[in-house]
Length: 105
Image (cartoon, rainbow, N blue to C red; front, side, top):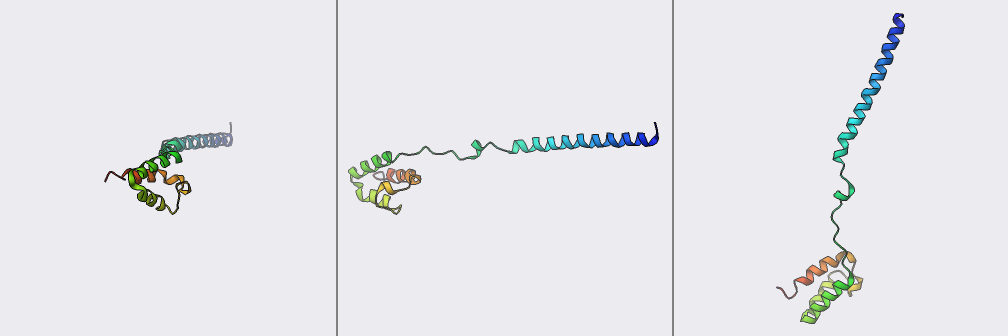
């Protein structure tokens, strides 16, 4: 074999080695990044179960019957509305917390 043919073989082997090294590097990068990625279910905050309007209405009605009608109206009014059905569902938990202290303090 001629020296040029041997040199061309070396060049081809080096290219093949470089390609193999590149594949190994990419694999290492992907495997290093994988543990840092957290599945979406773990990163999302735990959602509180949806509170139905009926439950909030029942609690507020009980408080009203116990003589806290003005306070119940104030709790509802705190959210800028006149009636419970107009309050956004996102505030139901807060309303229940506010109603919980009525009669306990």
